[in-house]
Amino acid sequence: MRLGLVNLAYLLGAVLFVVGLKGMSRPRTAVWANALGAIGMLVAIVATLFLSGIVQWWVIVLGLLVGSIAGTVLAVYVRMTAMPQMVGLLNGFGGGASLLVGAEALFHPETFSTQMLVATAASGLIGAITFWGSLVAFAKLQEVVIGGNPVLLPGRHVLNALLAVACLALAVWLVLDPTNPAMYWLLALAASLLGIGLVIPIGGADMPVVVSLLNSYSGMAACATGFVIQNNMLIIAGSLVGAAGLILTNIMCKAMNRSLANVVFAGVGGDAAGGPKADDVYAGKIKSTSAEEIAMLLEGARRVVFVPGYGMAVSQAQHAVRALAAMIEKTGAVVEFAVHPVAGRMPGHMNVLLAEADVPYDQLKDMDEINPTFQQTDVVIVIGANDVVNPLARTDPSSPIAGMPILDVDKAKTVIMIKRSLSPGFAGIPNPLFALDNTLMYFSDGRKAIQAIVTAMKEAA
Image (tube, rainbow, N blue to C red; front, side, top):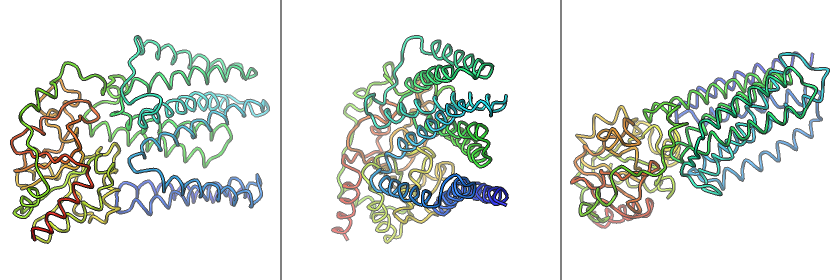
């Protein structure tokens, strides 16, 4: 009877996971889809721990309370701009858990079988890579201990290849001779070094792609752990996470027009020596503007497009942007938002922030839809975006972002760039857009700049 209830609960949880993942593909449905996924995980946990008789009900309630408090604290205090590193850290915890479960399984020789031992080796190998790789990704994105620039060690590719061969050899040895637990920890050590070696050469600009890939790894590690402890729900959940992570990684690579191999091995984001220097690109060509001048431009505009970027997220300017968009709409102008697939470091980042400010979904336009219309746009307001609007992607084959699809804002009649300085984006290269004849630079914090424009428009009304 209990086994039937457990399997029924697992089926319900799996359905909720699938429906939840489908709903997360659109901003309009993402909130309830996330809730469905959480409910599915709750069902799976209760079925595993209570219906299977592992713990008493009060232990589950206690765990729910502790987890809810921790989740609430993270939701309140972790900024949206820090979400990629938060995801990376959570990926690491998942990998570490798989590593420890695999180690514990080796203390039960009565359960040994070829399938179980192969799964244990996979759990330790992938779990260790995920754990240490995710910690390095977190440190790079948070810029603690190590900076966001690539760390390009001599002979790193050869070293990583040797570590990979060593990991595979140790995994085979463990399967053939599982009576020596020390072999498992040697495998974990080699995999840990490989995880660090694979991630540390990657620059901060590409780290979100790596976080997505590590998310896939954590799912595969969980799937392997499911085979170790013979838990169907863990196998299903791990498979879904692994597949979803790979799909997201592929989407992000396509959005940058780069292969995964280029992201992992090229070390983009380091020293940009050899390319154009900022002084050569900007010298004598930058035209500053003011909130009052921007207000006058907006009063006569018939079509205005906002381009949100990482700077909007950092300054939490989304509510001020919504207020300015509403004022512009009152003048009879058409207002839209151009969202690049990887703006703000991760897909959907800008969509979430704008939805938080109640920006209508039909005003959010993806890159393919909005690009053909920029020539008919009177004013484009770029808030903290850089690489995703850099025309070097179209014009310079030697640029680190060459071929990356960008928002063609330079084709608009007037471009307002809101940035605190002329500092480069994540790719570390200057942006010729800043020096174009139709570009005006407004140097300020994103939220303060938008609020100043709102005030100027009110005073001019």
